[in-house]
Image (cartoon, rainbow, N blue to C red):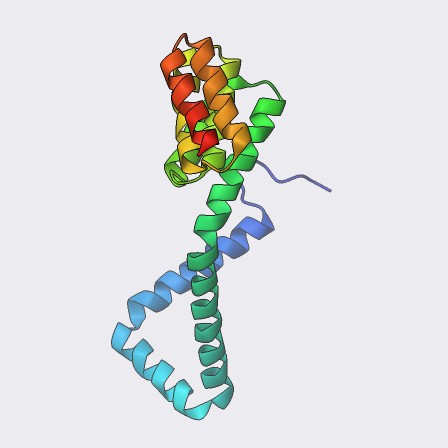
Length: 172
């Protein structure tokens, strides 16, 4: 059996080209008005077409509603999960980027700020670690671990006044 030469399209390629050529010829010979009337005639004649269109429309609306409602929550959780995976793999450059994305997507989440603080600690950036842990502690003042981390970051950054204010949160 002879293999096709590079200049000669394969049989699958010929069928695709032929199909495209037929569609192009059909579009040139028919107007949009003819297509519309043909669809309306089929719509009136076929109950199956009407039911299929209504089911597809309902499925599209339901899918859109689910995506619109679920996607923001999924994006927040996914960014936090990816940041944790980069931290576990000790890829700090990637973890820094995804931690910033997690903060951008969920600025009111203490977990996002806590992760950013962890990334800054591993990068030995004491000032950013202090800022990020402070934001996490202020968003969740009931979480003693976050408040203690903020105080320890303040002490590591030579800021005892911030450490004292963090510890004052615990006594409240």
